[in-house]
Amino acid sequence: MIRFDYKKLFVKLFILLSLNIVQSQEIIRKIKTEGNPLFSHKYSADPAALVYDDTLYLYAGEDKGDGKFYFIPNWSVYSTKDLKNWSEYKIPLSDSDFSWAKKDNSSWAGQVIERDGKFYWYVCTEHNSVPGKAIGVAVSDSPVGPFKDAIGEALITNDMTTEHTSISWDDIDPTVWIEDNGQAYLFWGNTQLYYVKLKKNMIETEGEIKTINLPKFTEAPWIHKKNGWYYLTYAFGWPEKTAYAMSKNIEGPWEFKGILNELAGNCNTNHQSIVEFKGNSYFIYHNGSLFPNGGSFQRSVCIDYLFYNQDGTIQRIQMTTEGVN
Ligand code: FUB
Figure 1: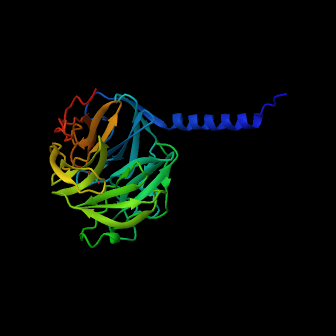
Figure 2: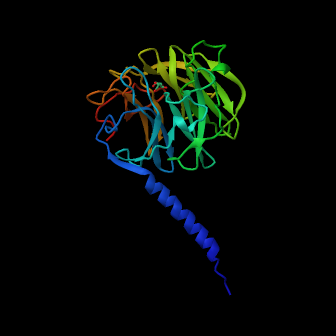
Figure 3: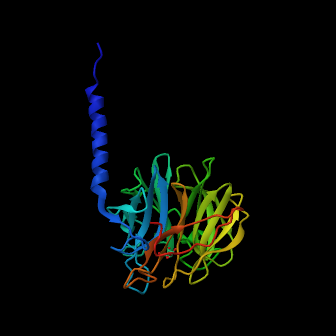
């Protein structure tokens, strides 16, 4: 006689049901985009995209600046399957989720990466006892969160990099990359570009912090790979354009290839993210085009196509108002 395991069935049903409830509960808004900027209900800055399970997840800061400086107390997450219809989820991470972060301060850019079914969000915020910016990491079982501090302290603090620059905001804009052999890397910086290996647990560094020197490096490094080439795009000069370098090795040497994107109009920063999604390559960035008060501290995320040349170099981005719709 076959005995039916009701207990197992009940546990499975309970897990499925709660996952479903969490997912549907967390969507706070459905958005149909009409071009650039992508979202007009609020300001959004420093986009970082993650393609996972046939879906593009977009992480961005809630840009609540008063017109004088950056103020980003929360990060948002959006998802889409077609780049037109988007879901916005309940705020998945705030600077107040890091007990070591200064209260009511500005948390800047970050990036989410998946490893072994967990999602790690590297962000920068202001440290409350080590003067300057610091990098923390939050973790979740879902790409839409909620995320929680994965360590309970910062991963990178300003005092770890003082030999390279005296500014207190050089430890910003983390971007992460995992090699096919499993070795993970963290890149970050302002004025000086840094990188360090990460242990498999993604919450500890391994070995020394190294530097990379690229022309007019300001901030916002982003690593991606295509056809055997590594690309390191970054914010170039001030106000920022986007430039890029290429290498056959994640640890360089990097060859500077020039400007990729022009000034983002009335916005000092440009902050890019590059991904491939359903057969096309995309350049996701921000500008100050949201009418009437958009600008350098009230930015909005945009998306345009990115095209490669035969030799692997990238064609200049054409910023458009139509976007990719
Ligand atoms: O959003 C604050 C800062 O502005 C980011 O960390 C930089 O990349 C620039 O976009």
